[in-house]
Length: 455
Image 1 (cartoon, rainbow, N blue to C red):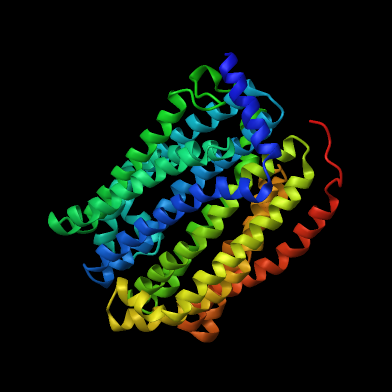
Image 2 (image 1 turned 45 degrees about the vertical axis):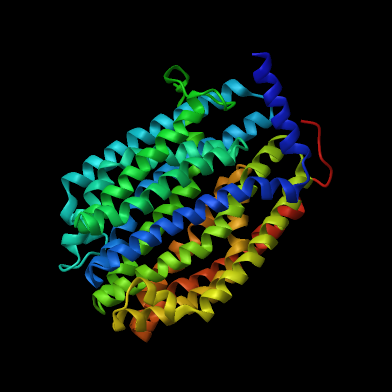
């Protein structure tokens, strides 16, 4: 017990006194690494499935929307409980932290089971709903079957990963994600090509990687390394606690849920122009996700800094942390976006050599690279509001990029400009989201107390 108290005091000192740049980099690097590795294994799926043809490549975009549904609920419970846990630990309230950790974790498992069973019962209409065409459907069904079976591991891993990050243990969070991702990359060529299992092989390798990640992340909690504990008896019986988790994590549900909806609409609108358009936009989405993952990784490194110090009333560290995370993200995204602009053609060709896919993919990738420059401020602002408990503002901002702006744009722009409208919808939405986020964040930062207060 004495050792546990000592570890908690040491963590408090680290989170409230370590210089902001080194703390965010220390917490952000493992997260960036895990995000990049995850993006790479997503692109590995895209590469190997792409060898099966453009219809199979289109199935990736459809099933990606399905995985986004699981992640939406996983991140809701993970960010919701994690943000609360971090603020509770900033106030030295460890029993309350365990209550929120246990509740968020077991709720996520239950939701994963429900979604998985419902998806298996209505698999064909679900694939059509997510944007599958008749020719893509067989590939999408084979791929999605195993993703649905692994649903609880998707949602549970999201919660475990985020609690570890919010406790300042991003290395262990990285270890779980990276181990599963590397396994996925090794199994893809085995199942897809060597064993000739096609898109079903991609589904099996992804499902197995999630199970391994889940086991590694769970072992960190079971070994007693965390301040919060996962116990059945710690699950709350208070509706208020559940509501607090859901309301705090709701921006993540909106962000991920709208991400799934936007992918669905994108698939439908691109499908009007054939399987080549669906495949091209799916490939561009995976490449853009790789670039964007750096921004998300830095933002997630900033989140525990923001929530912990806000709970400890170290407001100056919240303010300086936001600016450092934003400027660092801007610098790195600018470099990656420039590289993608210069090598857009070979990047698209790497995943699919079909001439129609390449022709559609190149301008779409270039548009998205330019829009990436507007993402760091928007992302870090959204994550800051969620981390400090301003769930209303965070929820509003979370609806912008893939909801309030994107949905009308993806429906209206193609009516005016055809396929170019499909390619431009997301980039235009990113710019508009930045313009709304800018004044909200500046106003919040100005309103923060100038002097830090005793916790």
